[in-house]
Image 1 (cartoon, helix red, strand yellow):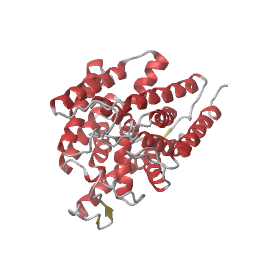
Image 2 (tube, rainbow, N blue to C red):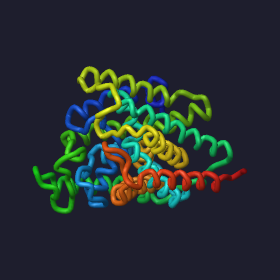
Image 3 (cartoon, rainbow, N blue to C red):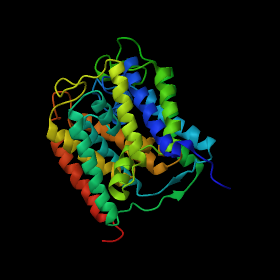
Image 4 (cartoon, rainbow, N blue to C red):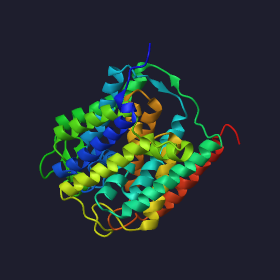
Length: 363
């Protein structure tokens, strides 16, 4: 049977998806999400880790409905368009480790690739170093691809394998409904809630969930991926995905100007620090880990939603990595890199390089 025509897979489609994200993320900030953090997969997974008590950084604890929506929306789209396929078995432990170090690198920079773009779109000059680091990390990954790097093929498996991460996300949503935030309280039942700081800043639940679901659907259909955009440019000289990234950046910038959220400069930017070298280095680590795992953190969520158990393992690695980053003083803050953050970046790069060098099918 001929494949269904998919508008979102076209050039206009990917530009439309980028533009939609570029408008909705700053709106989420307007509705209550933290500054320059309308959407940040790394930060929001970090908040989820705090919400379930994997770390006790009191200012970053909240079950982010956007992440739940990303996975469930992607699952909905995959079933509607007959693309849900449970598969797993491609070096899961490696993907878990890559997820951990991707999160540590992102938390040294303070943001995922999406947030790097949103920070730049809001005038944060520090994001330039993060984006350069991301491109550098993906570039290292491209060198490994050219030399035969491959984590191996995944295999089709039981449908229930593909349902597990969506069920985990649904479970988190149910917990939020059972144990809702109590004003002024940092604990509701078994869930932790920030009463100050970025974790206390959030848009209304239904708005966050609805936007997350919409993005899950359109990103699953379009295969939107920031890492993939730079990988395709460097490896194949293709700009299909990159056109979506550019659309996101331009529309986010325009939306921030309209909403008076554009504040150019380097100092005193929301949830950011000015240590340029480690803004760069953190994202080199994250970019390399994303490349070796085959997708940016958003793409890993969308893949998990359509049944990819290996992507789900990467996501869990990121959530655990967030706990490690905060429990062991690796994560940055507006005051700078955490006490052991620089050492963690160096170790992470060595581990990722080791994975890249030792998992090549031809040398």
